[in-house]
Image 1 (cartoon, rainbow, N blue to C red):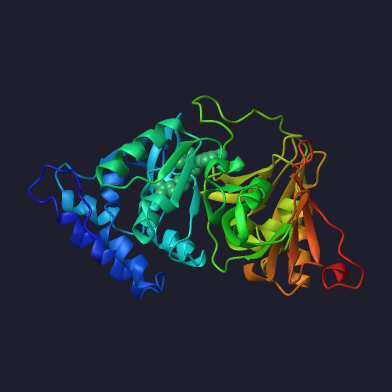
Image 2: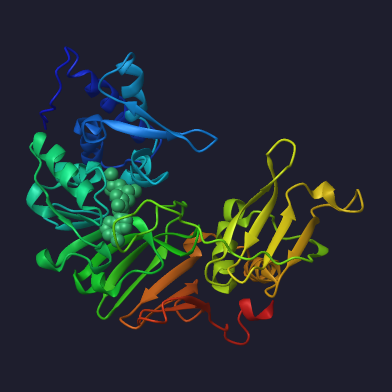
Length: 419
Ligand SMILES: C[S@@+](CC[C@H](N)C(=O)[O-])C[C@H]1O[C@@H](n2cnc3c(N)ncnc32)[C@H](O)[C@@H]1O
C-alpha cells in the first residue's frame, strides 16, 4: 500500500529504504512472523508521525532531534527506522508521550492475534504510529484510539489524515475505554495500569482479547494478554518484560512532581543475600515485593559521593522509612562473604525485610518466570496467581477507595506456603 507523505525535499522517498530495512530486520530477529505486519512497518512513515523526538542527557536536559530536515537527514531517518523508543512530548521536564520501540510494538500486535474484519481499540494514541500500523493491517473503520491528552490527539489526527488515514480518535481517559464504538474484538493499551479496568471487559466481544502493561507498583509487573470468558477476563503475562509509562487520569501538568517526604534517621545495619536492585535483575520477585511494600514506595539508587555512580539500591516510603543495599558484595565485613551485601534500614517500616520475604517466596516457588504468573479479573477484583487461578498470590479490588494490591495468604500445603 502506498502512503502519501508530505515533504518538500528531493529525497521524499528516502524513508522507504529505511522502513523496508527495519521490517526485514524485525523478521530476521523473530519479532515479526506475519508478513502483513512486515508490510505495515515497511510502508508506514514513522518520521512523518514523529517529526521531532527528544533525547535526555545525563544531567536531565532535553534536546530535540528533527527527522526531516537538518544536516544529516539520513542519520536521522536511520534512528527513526530503528528499534528505538522516540520520546515525542515533554512537559515540565518529564516525557509524557513517546512512540514505542517498533520491535515491541509488533510483538504486541502479533500477540493480539488480530484477524481480518476485527475492530481494535487502542488506549494511548500518542503519535498515532501504532494506530497507523493497525490501519495498514485492517482499515480506518476498524481502528479506534484514545489518549488523555487532547493536544496529542489533535496532532495525531492531523498527521494521520495527511497520509490518508482516518481512524476514529478521541481525547478521553482511556481507563473507561471508549463505549461510543464498543464492542471491540481487541483492546491494546500502550500505557501501564495497576489492573485491567472492568470497563474494558464490558466493551470486549465474548472471547475478545486485551493486552496491557499491568504494573502492581512502579516497574513491578509486565504485559499481560487476557481473554474474555463470560463474566471474567483471564490470561497470563508475556515471556518478555516491557515497561510503559503509567496511565494518567488527566492531562499532565508541569510543576513539582515529587512530594518531599521525611527521612527517618538512625539506620540499623546488617547483611542481606537478596539482590540489591530486583526491579532491574529479578523482576518477577520485584512484582511480589510490590504486593508487600507500602503504597508510594519509590525505588532508585544512592550515588557515590565522588563519582556520582550508583553505589546502592535504595527504597523510600511515604512514612520516612528507607533502606540501602550496597551493589558491591565486597562491602561486607568478611572478604569471602559471597553474595552477601551490606544493608542499612531505617524508619517504622522494615522495607528491605518485605523485599526479602518476596524474594524468598519467589525462590521457594522455583524462581518462576513471567509465563507462570496469570491474572483473573471480574467486576469486583483482579487476582494475581501462580500456575493456576486457584493459587492466588495477590488481590486488587476494583471498587473506589480500595484500589490497591495486597497479598493473599497462600493455601496451606502449597509451594508458596512452605517458605
Ligand atoms: C507510550 S505512549 C503511546 C504510544 C503510541 N501508541 C504511539 O504509537 O505513539 C503512551 C500514551 O498514553 C497516553 N496516556 C496516558 N494516560 C492515559 C489514559 N488514562 N488514557 C489514554 N491515554 C493515556 C499518554 O498521553 C501517551 O501518549
